[in-house]
Length: 315
Image (cartoon, rainbow, N blue to C red; front, top):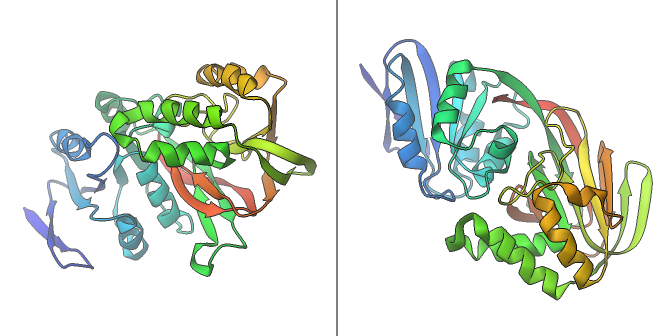
């Protein structure tokens, strides 16, 4: 039996296939990094003989936020997301303040796949196996506020990373190089390491204060960022803590030597890196754009705090 569900915004019918009683919500971002989200969703659908599923295909940035905030999610057994970290960022902001959430499975269709690297879920077969095993973990998220930003943009949630300084510049450049795929993060990093800008701030990590010129500050909930960069090797998704890296401004040569160590996580042993686990941190600085989960948004000054065990994931 087939059902039709109407989109609230353009009233186009969205086909829902009814096979038994179990119901899934498939969220597909066709614009995600690798451009394979639609193909991945078709791959999964071939395995869903005993499921009723509804497919929602994103039409623009923020589409899933509008849909999920008005949808009754208690009718779904799982939410399957076909996209990358940017898509998951959208899902995170849509669901952060909702209760009684179904577990979420992220199919690896993005460019960086930071969350999927942490979950060892880097191909469609692995995702299908996790779907069938149905192991659930509630992961932390973080809440960031930007008091100097325009009123509608003073807060955001995130699940992956929030960065200030050099890392934000790298992300902006990487977004302009999407045609390079995951390699764009390394290219952007090398470009800005050569420029080696400095940023003045007061950084407070829990009760510890750092003042002066910095290269960057990065807080992580996941171990990975970018393309397999193990930036926070001690991070745990559900420990109720952020892993905060504070890098004072150093010479171009020091930064260049530090960069290749990030892929293995060995950079945290460098005297150039301050690595702390914290429940909150603040940056008091002139307005500078931030990177949150790979998205350029927000600005300093900022306050960030952990929100423990908030999102249920299929792991």
